Length: 390
Ligand SMILES: *Cc1c(COP(=O)(O)O)cnc(C)c1O
Image 1 (cartoon, rainbow, N blue to C red):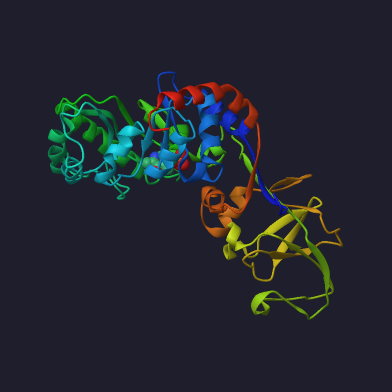
Image 2: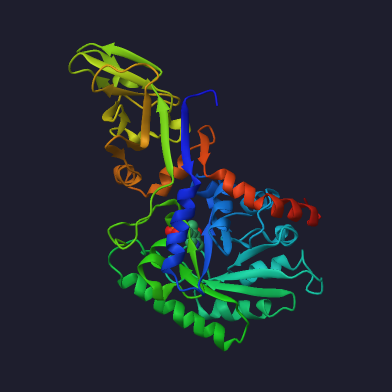
């Protein structure tokens, strides 16, 4: 690391969060840890290993390349890909032992050009139902009936049947109840088709933590394992974010009353002020939507002033500070704290938009990584030597 801007990621905290979540669930409910988008910005492999250590049963990612990356790094848990892959990539999914989300008969039809039913390899799928989110999934009984013969094929393993909620993080539950009812109706379709289905699942973090009766056979935990959850609605738990973000002042200068600062002269000093420059900008994921937020220096809040640039931003210091002073953009300094929730509220989004926006240019520094590596090192080596593709 040649630049003083880094994200600290405490893997012990991710494990602690998962352990707490695990304890709230009935023992037979499986836990699928969602590590898509580079583990919500926390590192995909590091998050996956932490989940493995904390007793997760499954992993999930959004895309095929994310799953392949986990496999090539030696992750051996079952992995579900949450977005349908291209039918022509089906052999790749089989070779890496990945489970696919399926949403249409047309997909199966196209996939058959790339995998003969008589071939000895099995394809594991989870059928995705659209109960009201409107994103992906089977919506009608007709679509379900159309997909059933494809699911009955001899080389098919239907490991799951699932849906996703639109409003699990909202206080009002009428729409969620409606989706849950719709899912029950759809589960009845599947039972009448007498297809063997291993797991029914519908709950992401918020639904799993708020409504234990929605845990079914498995829950898909993303946000909460990283410490992101609607605290007001889930006050019986205490999860903590695992990521904090830091930098250092690279220049401290005087700005005199009336002088301008930054691109487009956005800011003009109202008095003689101390200004500090910090080496982080929108190319690191600290976008111009963070205008008018604050950072911590020497335990005090300092507002961002002037436009956030690509590589740097400026803050108004409460008093003179030494160059090199530590700056905290997310996390604690003394009694002060800048939280993900505060920043997310400012940009009108959720904490995971902030953590996933941190680009590869921001170095990730881990604590609690050695434990995971020590425990899994041997398994990884043996997995690699047993897998022809590695
Ligand atoms: C991302 C995702 C999840 C995880 O949701 P969280 O709210 O982060 O726990 C679960 N299921 C699906 C289908 C997803 O896309």
